Image 1 (spheres, rainbow, N blue to C red):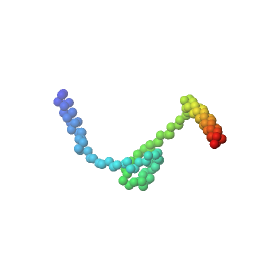
Image 2: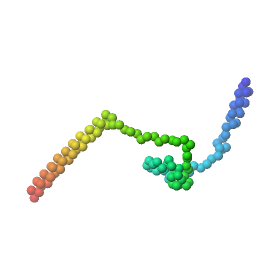
Image 3: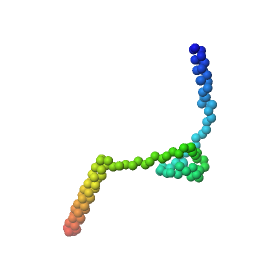
Image 4: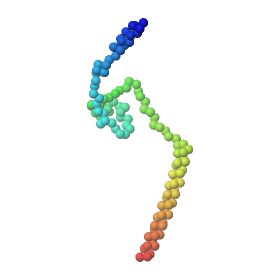
Length: 114
C-alpha cells in the first residue's frame, strides 16, 4: 500500500513544470501611458489604439460595469458642522468690520493730530 502511495506522489510531482520551463516575456513600462485624473477613454479600444501603438490593450469578454460615484447624504454631524461654520463666518465678518472701523477711526485721529 505504501509503495502505491509513493509512486502516485512521485508521478504528480513530475507533472509540475519548473520556472525555467515556462516562457518568459518582458513587461513594458506603462508609466507614461496613464492619466492622473479620471477618464472614460479607457473603455474605448479605438481611442487606446490611437493613443499609443506600443501600449497593451486588454479586452474583456464580459462587460465590466463602472461603480457608481458615492452619493453622500449629509448626516447630523455634517449639518452641525455646516451650521457652526456659518456662525463662525458671521462672527469673523463682524470682527473684521469692527477692526476696519477701529482702524479708520485711528487713521482719522492721526490725520487730525498732523
